[in-house]
Image (cartoon, rainbow, N blue to C red; front, side, top):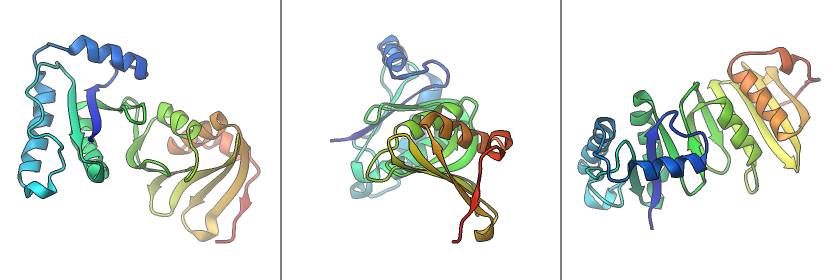
Length: 214
């Protein structure tokens, strides 16, 4: 079995249902130049490796009449590597990533470059308001946490304790600047994380923060 990622242009869909409709609209269309460029770069990098280290389940990819869509199948043990590589190639070309296994649409529109660590799905190179809402809402066992890091020692993180009860913490430069509070509601937590990401402090400063001993 392969782990599949699908690339589509940013803005052509806003949710998984619209993604499916867009995919259907591209069937039979000539391959777009941007999709061909990304496929060529992935194929070239994969060809540099020994066959047993291939990060593509099927190679080469691309060259199919699928319009602007690019299908990228990879072995499960290469998911993290492939996803990082796809972000590197897709984001500058204004392409979004659809993950059908998680039913996630990761669109760079309006993104802020930060390091996001999702307890259940790994690391991502940017955050958007939409993704903040999606990822906090879906946090669940066994690792229900999300960390957004601007630079070392400057981050905000949340942990879902149970139901709509969340712990929210931020660090502002070192262990002596680490604060925590409790917040109710996934939507509220997502809004606060997005505020921090865009360096908007108003709602964060309304909360009662306790300095934590680290």
